[in-house]
Length: 597
Image 1 (tube, rainbow, N blue to C red):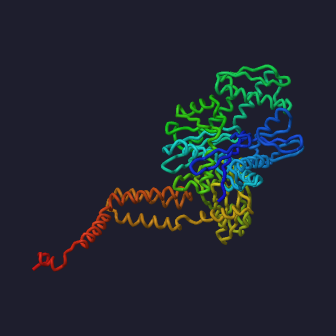
Image 2 (image 1 turned 135 degrees about the horizontal axis):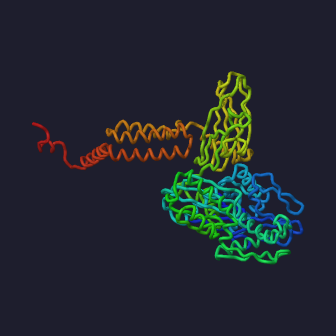
């Protein structure tokens, strides 16, 4: 199997890594550096330039460099370079291609596959655009990894496998992700995620830049692109100074802006009150979704270059009421985690070494009639946000009026009560026989995997007619075809699986043998939790979790209450061994009086 690399495709900087057999290793680019600016430029001869060369030209030649395009992934937005227009995925593909070439140079071999990280709060279209960008760059991208998940994996690899609840605060140049993970033994379970795809360190730069221009009575938006670039660079430098100093002097040193602006950390906080408020929202939401208090956290891991800001670190400590907060290589943590993922995909890290679960960051559902306002349909959730992946869940929908001939289903992603305020992924209709309202039923099943591929199955129950829809992948790819086959396995009823049947039979047998009311009550409760997970939650990981708990309880009960059977069997075996080793024949036994006279 050829080597797989990991790529942290960032808003500001991007990195590549690989698994060397024992640890994740960062890959140096052509400049001998680890960080490659996510910048694409065009030279005077029309050739494309990537990274820090492109970023430098932004200051000297207007309109020759584009940055921050990650925020446009999955949208139709166009970015202009010279006389050419590009989409965000095309620009991302150029960065990925550069990283692939650097990796081939560094490792001395051809690279054809990569694991790529994305913000946990990336929508379905953005994830699909990321995979397409990989294909454009000559890379097969089967595995898409949430950045906080990668960060947790890297943290566990570098800090040991201590158990507890860890909050990951991933604040980069353009996005914010907050996630909660529960680590126990060799399992890392992501339990809640939230974030803001439109908030990052560049927003703090922009606030400083606008304030600086305001002092001169000249709006930032009115400046030429080249002047804007100089001002933003000065704002970024001032922000960096504030990381190590209580104050900084911001000087753009360009046409019309020769004077400086003195900024203290307190000034910086006041200017960015709106940004700090936006930071707090996903932190609070993750704690609420995870049903925990800050005091329940074992630690907080700061990830992303913007976490280097001292005021950001202090604000996180303030939000979490003094919980231990640790910034450990924030620039490279995600890249190291993605490298470990690449090792897992190469089978260099076995599943026995680590079990890592991820979750669905958004709710997925369909639209239903709003009885109080027919023009404003409601969102009916089928897969709730924070469901462990992979997962498969279903709901049944009925016709709403007499002689209805068609049932329309919109597929939505989001948390709003009204479907129109969520992201519409797809729409399809199902022809139904005209009958009285409520008599025709369609069963809708959503099956969602760790790479963001959603399989939608619709079944008209009266005729057993089926419709199938695949979202989030390129329908003609071999990977998609294989993945759909895997997803189909999830669609079968979990209580039909052989291992689940065996576990139920095992539990029922032990229950019958038990002669202790308390033990029987414990076993009955755990068995009901296991069967309930299979019948109602339709959650693969939850079924596995309850199954493991049931298995552990069964073994414990057997040791505690049924051990006499085990001891008896062992005793008989030992007795037979002892008896066969005796050098006494039956006549001798008789002569010693063993038989009655």
